[in-house]
Image (cartoon, rainbow, N blue to C red; front, side, top):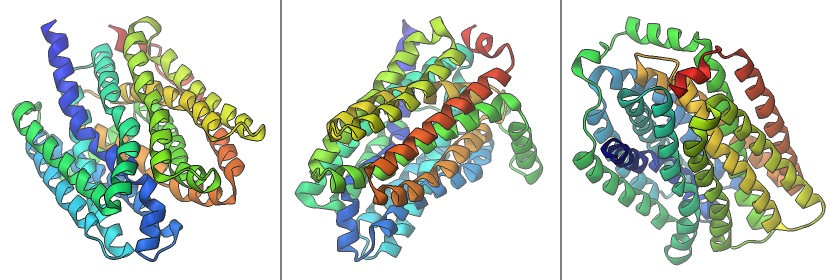
Length: 403
């Protein structure tokens, strides 16, 4: 009981820091059209603030992974949180799209450091089934972000404008900073640290990338995130311009769909010991593709925006399952250099996913059905890639996480 309580406390504290990245993605989505008007820019250029954030968050992890392996988790985390707060305030004061892009780049770098610390901390303190359950618990708590962030962001924007949304992000950063100082301890012992030099860094990255049990689930996770960000990038335009939802309506509709991520992660935590991580990863991918197909069918027969959103509830539930399982499989492939492992995993998923935002932004401007068909194609590719991955994992993959 004490162990379970401590895991919940640890997951809550880690979720509070990892939630900052999703908040920075989801919270201002309903504000994108307003930002474009106020800063005198096109919608496509404003969408680049999301692309730049994802790219810097991905690239930053490759930089910060070895740093956290060399200097521990706590001090880099605190530095990352301070920078996140400052970049959020800079974004709030932006007077041009160029300034906002610079601020978002810095915000993404700080979020990358925070994410590396969170993922590597989980593996510092657990492995196998315990790590998979802790990842799922972390995703369950973190799943509140896509549920609450769009709705809260829409309300804040409706009352005080888009700049107040970034101020709210800064305040969340302050809260996370205080909680981390009080409740998160250093998880990497001094004797387990790896000296920061080019030989160690490049050697670790080469070993990680050449490990089949890492690279295959990492690609599957990246495909799942590509689906997610193609959905995110197109939803704000399709829901608001095609189906004429207000910023508040979009926030609540998008957030309601996000509850499915929470449900999926919860189910993963409950079922991991019964079905095994490999089977669950397949089920998660199938649900993601199935939801996209259902959404396309709903649109074809003109059932309306809420029927489409309900279909994506299925996809997002699948994401909650797939994210936890792919992440646990990839992270469990390594025993050392866990910060670097988390860095490669995060960099892959975010850098690959960053290309989804301009693609979905362009496709969604052609019409809702074009966007939905894009998501169907991505979903089918994800299912095929997942089946390929599990067929080529070591036979001990499920054993490694169940015992």
